[in-house]
Length: 113
Length: 115
Image (tube, rainbow over all chains, first blue to last red; front, side, top):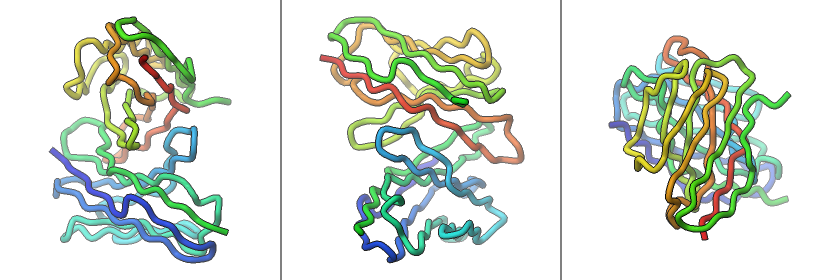
């Protein structure tokens, strides 16, 4: 089945710096890749997603890139702010015919003022 | 306004007890899920229901029994609780699959502590 690896597990940056989180997936038939942000004491919340027919997608300070050949995708956050501090999860939808997300192991991002 | 609500938020109980967690969504979604998040924050799907029908069961011990009385509710009952069941359990829902997307909306979680 699908396996999603995520790196790094923790990431500390200064406010204003950029942050990059990387994921790889194993199922070449996966075609949808969302990113979720989980703040302390809350459930994960979708922040951006990308379909397999698109190489890059941007929404204000966040962007996601996808390399289908290499089977990896990345989250880019520019001009980080303290409120960006959270755990970020990448995910993939495997081609099983069922609606199912396989999550990466998470990245704890800490943005220091 | 709450889209996906879970109760209770915290649950502390003794080993061997039976407990239930309730979940309700008011988004009109067809599919609901239960996830378990362990102490290392790893999120793993347990069950998925579509219109009250079980469609995903990820090799969860049969002490865990989901029940969906209608498509807006998915409850989780756990029998004979064990120490290893301690975790945060999340309920989620998603609309009908639209071209391969699977946008899931999560509840705030239920922190279960088994003593």
